[in-house]
Image 1 (cartoon, rainbow, N blue to C red):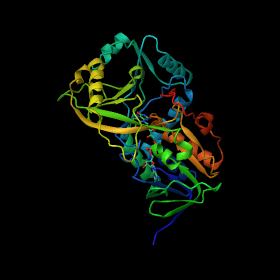
Image 2 (cartoon, rainbow, N blue to C red):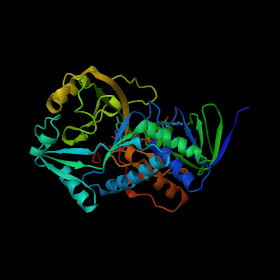
Image 3 (tube, rainbow, N blue to C red):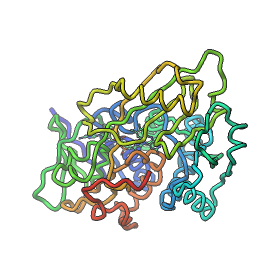
Image 4 (cartoon, helix red, strand yellow):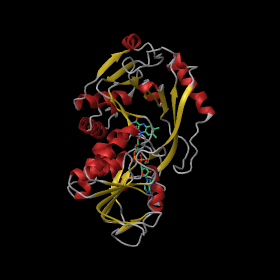
Length: 386
Ligand SMILES: Cc1cc2nc3c(=O)[nH]c(=O)nc-3n(C[C@H](O)[C@H](O)[C@H](O)COP(=O)(O)OP(=O)(O)OC[C@H]3O[C@@H](n4cnc5c(N)ncnc54)[C@H](O)[C@@H]3O)c2cc1C
């Protein structure tokens, strides 16, 4: 006999957005069911993978700086509560800026206006502090000394375990796209024909959102293939350990790096949007031409790793909205369903603040943030938020 489930609120998707939403809803007293097709922070999910940078810098977009500040506090509270402080690695985050650099200059201004602790570092000082990097056209740097790296997969899995210990029910099942035709969603159905009945639904399905709501989202969320590399450091070489090298953001080259955490190697990711990608069926093998491009970057910026072996690699995906703003809004056809996504390659750090915001939206105590509204999403890609 198939078992049906019933809850006040069903959250579909246990990536960082759904897991924090379920956690915050439960903290607010709701009876919550969390569902995921492949498991929390699974290898296909955008929240899978070893590490994600937690930075406060967002150019002129103070909204994200403030969200990251709030999230930072909530991440640390969670890690303290579950006695796993190492899930945040305080590496610091170094921005590499050019002579005339509108984005980094705007970031600096936002930091000053929002009491962010940072240090501006002149080029000569950069050379002394970080001889592992060859700075080339970099004219100055900005160090967010308190920021760092979240151990992504482990953090989401620990969060789901914490949510379960507070009473959230977790079910591994794939939900079929809901059928239109009513103004309230009574239930959703799994591919095994189990019904999940709830008063309210939150769809936090990341890059799968266009598959669940093709009519609504197939032109508004663009899923792109992204590649990540781990470079093996030379034997006995300590220069790339996190106490000697912070995470760095080479904004003008659309590349960022993470020091040798857990001795997995130095992680380099290309932030430029790749081609369209299917999160279910896409093959996750990096391209040889990308390795060639990576080596050209290394030769310029990290010469000691120019010939280092790629010891691990990953293919992940971004779920981009037109400009990089999140999509957090009520479903236009269902009065009791919310869509939470559009992480656009920068969402991980914001999971806690998003969960808090969605819990308030669902309870009716908050309004939709205009920048996250469905109505402000465009079909034409024009990236503005990084
Ligand atoms: C390579 C890479 C690097 C990144 N770097 C950073 C960074 O340094 N800092 C940062 O802040 N952000 C970063 N991001 C962005 C961040 O990781 C994402 O914005 C965030 O993880 C999105 O989380 P999500 O919960 O929306 O989606 P996901 O993690 O993809 O979760 C969606 C979940 O929904 C489930 N699901 C989908 N469809 C169904 C269904 N029908 N039924 C049941 N379950 C379903 C999936 O299995 C999945 O687990 C990066 C992303 C990538 C890919």
